[in-house]
Length: 355
Image (cartoon, rainbow, N blue to C red; front, side, top):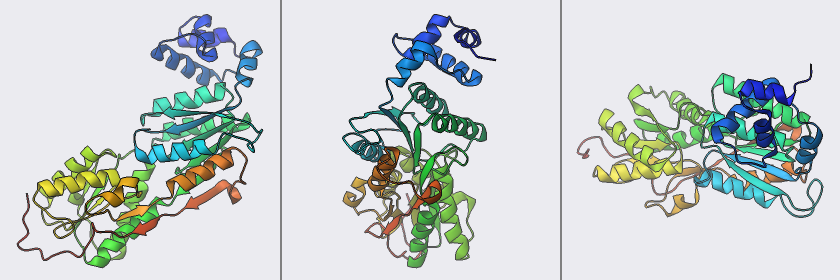
């Protein structure tokens, strides 16, 4: 049975005219109403037809780039690199493309909404950056949307995100486990045995994979992890500061702090300084990603460099059909350990101040 505009309106409890306005984007509609209409469209699997379909087809030069937080350098670098590969001659159909950066704020609802909007606009390509949500229901919903996009001819590329099997999406996935393991092994090699870990949000795949790498290294060296040594928080400086204060309160004898990313590591460094501790003389600190500021920190951060710009540029070329997709549709992008001044050998446990 064919789903009609009136069916969508009834499900969303709005008028057919409101549904038309949301789908055509030619009239302002309240955000809550837009969300309700798009949810009904998805639930009923409504397909545009007639004039609306012609309008959607006319915007096929659109390319969507999904990021969690455009203010975060991690996502800003990738969005810029993807966009640099989208415009100009040599693309899938030649000519310029309109790149739209969709800032989800890390919320699953906004991610689904943007994917729906890009599907309705018949986007030429969609690039999703960063880790995925761990929630099974959300993962199933995203997979369904990616499948619809690829079946309709949209090229979907995941950059820094785990593969999405059976969706037709191409994945350039970061080796977060390997990087986390190598980083912790470096600290263990220096003699550290009491390592605090500041993890990111628990619902993110990036958080889990980096923490798994850390724990793999501890286990491989016979170090029994104390539950007090891990604190979860946001991927920002303030979270790093607060988490480090909490780690010091739980176990003042820690000799190293491993942070979920470089921004969190900056907060950790600030908290250690405020506690009267020197880096790395009293406590070593390590980050992840090698964001531009990490080398200018004092001392410069030991970190794992992920080739964010290079990987994202490749994602842009693949999305535009200017580079072949990797064999099997999946490629693993590995990081590189960069040892700098923030990590060193631990001092003896006695006589060190703790604030």
